[in-house]
Amino acid sequence: MSEPQNFANHGKIVPAFHFFIVPVLAINLVIHIYQLFRLPVFSPLFVWNGIFGVLLAAALLTLAFLGRLFALGVQDRVIRLEERLRYQQLLPEDLQPQIKDFTVNQLVALRFAGDAELPVLARRVLNDNIGDRKMIKRLIQSWRADYQRI
Image 1 (cartoon, rainbow, N blue to C red):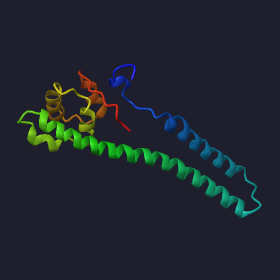
Image 2 (cartoon, rainbow, N blue to C red):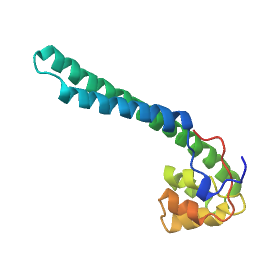
Image 3 (cartoon, rainbow, N blue to C red):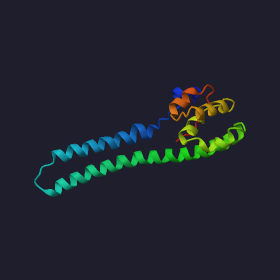
Image 4 (cartoon, rainbow, N blue to C red):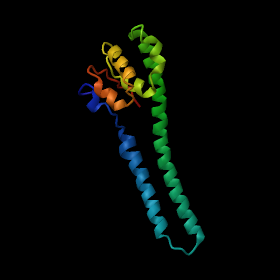
């Protein structure tokens, strides 16, 4: 961690996933599609094998993306739980009953707000009904890093 985390650099790139798995699976799909159209039409078996190759390549690429989405979904659920517990400790009494009103997007984005800044920012997000993660993150002045992301 050479520089502190902030809005500009908080996105996480997983080199093995983003630069190896996805490109290899995407290239595999393109190759299978190309081969399907280059197949000689002598035998229906060649065509069915070609179609199956394309479907299998597409399934593998889809599996990679779904695996990533499922992991991010679980991460969001954990963040929701962590942040609701954090809010019980940090939010003023008048905001306590509204903890259940925060959406997952709001909770996920607000996790980067420092403890001192959270009550004011949480009130603003609820009152203005701000639901966009990026917009909320841009409002944060005192960034609280999260290095344990998926």
